[in-house]
Length: 455
Image (cartoon, rainbow, N blue to C red; front, side, top):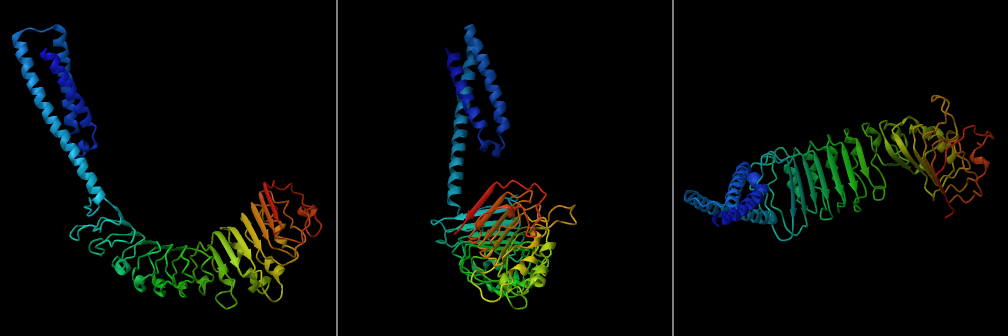
């Protein structure tokens, strides 16, 4: 019967409406509400047809009405087929456009512009005539087999603040962006930092990672607003600019001692510095341990190398480690191969840390006994021990010591590592009794990890 065939058509139309209404592209075009209303209408027609089929309607006027409804249903089905085809065409077009990535047209609400340049296309972003003043950050990742054509200029990207470039070297092009605050350069393809980088006067963060840069131009020291300098895994770079002390706003330095063996002169003038992973002591003025004493805001970890260049306890005290409450991880290092008088005991006595210290490592110490501050009491802290907060201690290559320092009294000590202390034959009561013969009255902590290595 006509109503039966029409019911089948109505079901097909309803299925298409549901599919189209759930397409994301219909939301973008703004006709999702219309599709939902049409769907409700088709559902009502479907109910009428089901009722007519159930009653076996034979009235001629009703039959003519059902025939007209059938014609309208088929017309609606054709229209929805056209619409479905258009949806599919648009989806394919968008997919192909995303694959090409040859030209990007940017919406006004976009703030971050990411771009990956492959080995099959030469990228242009965007046409110079297009306004890019709304872009705040720009990331470019390239395999360096193609040359991206990028209109970097103050006129086109006047509000750009952050740049991340990976495996791409655009040379002096970055210098047209003098309002940039954060600059990251990553990849072996980058072999040189232009001398004119000093013109990016608003730069706050400079991160250089895994590059082949051999030297940083001294013009970097004209970046007076620079707050963070990060240099990681740049094995060709062995020294920092000599006038680094001019960066008076510098707060954080994150560099590898594996490649950079010495710091520039007068580091103590960087009084805003909060992060300095290591300091290498020298014998000349400007490289002595007193430079560390000027850095009162240091926090986190601090490794001090070449302690054999410190004359005595008084000079060691100029580092003012006892006043650096923010330093929680401390490493004290003497060179294993050295000449001259052995004053290690006096020097270590003057390197008393702040009571908030969590981790302590001592390497190549050649004194016979450890300093008194290891078991001393904190007179200003309610009668507890100075190193009550200590969680971990590592003693390495302290060959002249025949006894382990008194550590059993430390209530929070969890990790004790002893390596290459060949004169220590056993750990006995001296672990709980200090060198003066006084037994600790404190119950001490529970050491959860203890490692002893002879080689």
